[in-house]
Length: 130
Image (cartoon, rainbow, N blue to C red; front, side, top):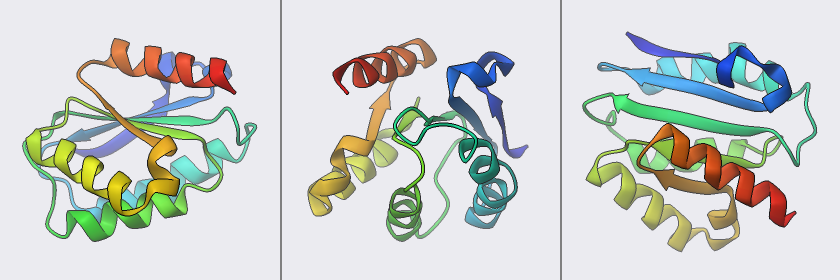
């Protein structure tokens, strides 16, 4: 339970880090993963190509203080391109919508998807536009 992740399909050449949020994880768990794994992984790829998929399908809720912490994460993601949140509940989708409205310059760097396949398609489309 908690936060774990690896390269999508265990293939670094995808330049996509796949994070699984499971159970009742905390923001401390999440940022520990970012510091110890995500940042070092994405620093090995071109900033314009490195992307993140956060799979919330096994997470019943977001921890408290979600708006502040999600904004912190998005602002911190200066060395990767797009973050796609998968399977998020209605509150998480609303949170992404609020953040992209409050911080429109970050809107192009975050999206939501219902499935992993949809997230991959969003990333491929995004990369094709660059």
